[in-house]
Length: 124
Image (cartoon, rainbow, N blue to C red; front, side, top):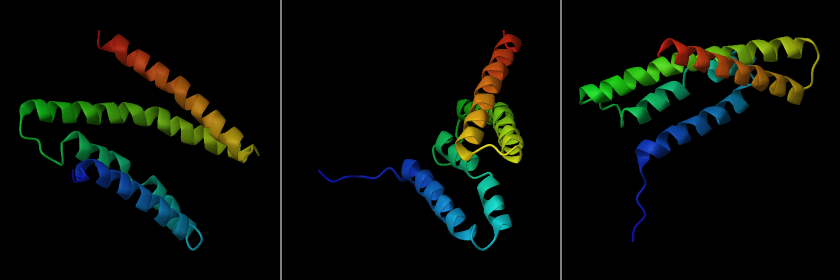
């Protein structure tokens, strides 16, 4: 039985890996370029591609699921931004790498619970 590859699912993963490799290579020559590559909206369009089955929005239900995904992504960016702020503040304070990551994820998790809780209250 031949193995078939679902490129629609595999391609976003390969693109993400390629971007990480490029960031690792570019950071030694240009930190600015590495930061730009690291913060580009790359995973969101890849997820949008997967959510829409390769960009197909043939039915109203597909479009609504797409819009719902984008709204959820906006909500999800709030805790992610807080993660970055906490990581920045703790790194400036001299914390070690793992402490910075831990503090960032703690802030992210608490904020995510709060944001989702507020969202649930508002959509009742």
